[in-house]
Image (cartoon, rainbow, N blue to C red; front, side, top):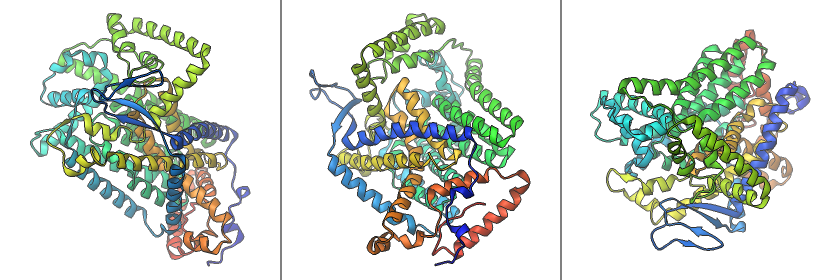
Length: 600
């Protein structure tokens, strides 16, 4: 064992300056809300699973108890075996506990290289086996991009883009990719866009690893993040779906990362990159306004401790203005290019009305009558359509208030239909879309004979993630690190938004990917508690390598240390960087006793 002084080894909270009351209040509020939501989701996942199934003619039924529609998209609620779920959950947790102390001496560049190569290899194998082609909305946005790249704007005349003009942001993004691809090779079909999706997913994973490396000084968290990302199945299988979800998430993740660097070091170029990234994310998919709001909230709260008021006010204003302006600018661009005036689109409040209505799929899922029909009935007048939507929302709120049991059932089913459908329509999207050509053996097995096995794996994996996130947000109540809740805040925003607006399980996958990143923190906290409790048990100590973690700073305390680093003055930045390099060198030399790089 390495001999260390008491000051160096004991994680005394009194040695760390507490965050200010405003930051502590924000962190606690976010943590408490997330504890409630993740507690409910964790419990629901152990008891039930929501299925996304294809129900063929003759397989549906309608009874007093339940209804199963003949649909390509049918939501089914299954009861699970609680004891089996608990057994597999414990096994998964113990596997992580075995790995945590053994993931040592892995430099950041090696982890980034591994997860990038691993994700790209698996993703390319999958999309080439699946051969899934766009259909429905995904066909409309990719076909329009294809035609626009040929200066053919006839699709601007279709009602789709009048109703959903916000989709033109993703069309523009795809058009740029198609034009770029055309420089190097002749574009025969759009399978290459799925290849870009795979690359964007790999970049997203790298961004999440960088975020955890920046937020937490405990390197075990970063190492375990790599493992959790590498063994996930849903995102890889989801890459065939061309709808802006994955590229939008990539830009949102890097917006968050560069915001963290900006807030920690007052690095102006990183602040500018952060603004650029979140604006692109919002352009691609308007749902990433949630990420924008979360980022602005964190920047606002941190502004009072940083005392860089002018910088932060400019940062917040520019991020908000540019992000809110970019989509209208794209619409205006295409209107000028095509000579078509799209006019009003379906108002945003209509999506809230939809989210509060019944649907033949599940509560709050897609309902044409509350959006497009309402818009058409009001002669494509957004103001009048908004009035009808607001009136309907008021009517539903009154009904919810007067019928508490119905309200409970409505929102519970809406919640679990989206968040506890643990495949997040990844397999389903491979089953119902068009094909470029016949599926390969791997995809045919996953979408056929092996579907239930793959979904069982996804379900067990999701339960581990849910429980780990729950432990992590509980730890955030006391870790004195506001930035530690930046990913949970984004997840919380997704929960709250989709509780009110349209629900659909495929819309939850970006937040699930963020959960995968944050879960490593919760598992490391749980490991520290476990090792402390059973440190005297020689058998467990050998299996889980408790000896190697006795003198290290627990994950919860390590999170605090990073928060204190953000309070350093600007003229100390170079010294901090040098000290960090020295600490990393010391870490490699002393790695038998410590796997931490506490930046001080």
